[in-house]
Amino acid sequence: MPLRYIGNKTRLLPFLLAGIEELGIVGTVACDPFAGTASVGRALKLRGWRVHSGDVMALSHAFQVARVVLDRTPTYPARLLGQNSRGVSQRRLLDALGAIPPVHGFISEHYSPAGKASRVHGRMYFTPENAGRIDAIRERIASWSREGKIRPGPAQLLLAVLIQAADRVANTTGVYASFVKSWQPNAMRPLELRPLRPAVPPGPQARGCTAHLGPATETLARAGTLDLVYLDPPYNERQYPGYYHIPELLARGWEPEPELRGKTGLIPDEELRSDWCRRGRCEQALRDVLSQADARHVLLSYNDEGLLAAERIEEIFRQHGDPDSYRRLSRGYRRYRSDADGPERRYSGDRVRESLHYVRLS
Image (cartoon, rainbow, N blue to C red; front, side, top):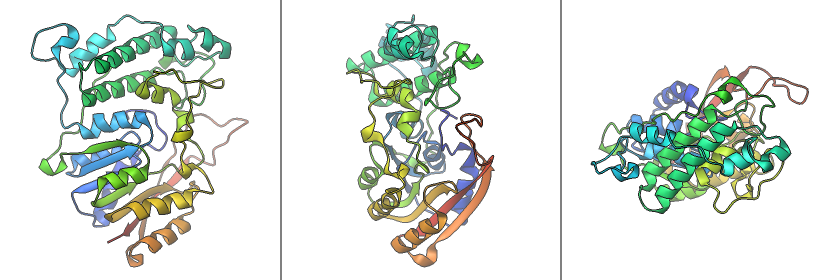
């Protein structure tokens, strides 16, 4: 898993791919406008689909480019390391980035005990050493991009690698809505940059994948005519910007510096907040997406704890597509827990049910 991310479908990929086959969905062009960590887009590409993906989160955009858009692992200019050879591998460049001395930058100041601003709130997201290494690496990638020394795609791959590395040493229980008040064993380990491999297309029809940073309706409008639209929107009232504000910062950067708020240092996020997480707006959000989709097939992944009831989804799907084509496939799985039961929160159980809602639009 590239990132501990709520709603990640890595474990459910066999169910999803088997569902596509069972439903008789065939074609070559798909759209994944709620891409998240791009697990589904990557799986579709590896099976021969050309995937147009999107998300409002910049951290998702980095993973979409790194895992789906790029068709091969890039070779980086040797001049980045002050050499005259033809190019350097990702592994070699990551080794060089990992050897950069730590600096006191934005992450150190605001999300580790090394910073005055952080100490006011007692923030312990990263150890001072790891925070300094994150700052040094992020600033080096940014300077290469500003100076035109590295192309956008390979730069996004490096950002995705850094986000993964930071997540592995983050002093959290899986999301960034809070930090642990004592250092966990993973947080004490040194930051490690590990290579990330793009999905190599199995044939020419799977080339030309794209990524869009923006709302689902914009992604669908850009994608044009499609064979399949795969929808994996947020299910409940948890807004992703508040749960992943630090990975989002690593993807977006901090120039100009954002005005942070609260004990956890949240970023301004109004434009990132989703109607899918609002009880009074999620139904219209579904209708808007279905109205925008120019596709033969629509598949919605949604679990039984979502804001929209399965019966309501079925009704909306039948209204927007061929009512006789509607089908629903389901399976249970063990829920993702970012923390344990406590006085302020109790999970309803360890099991949750995921459903694939299907309708043919044309």
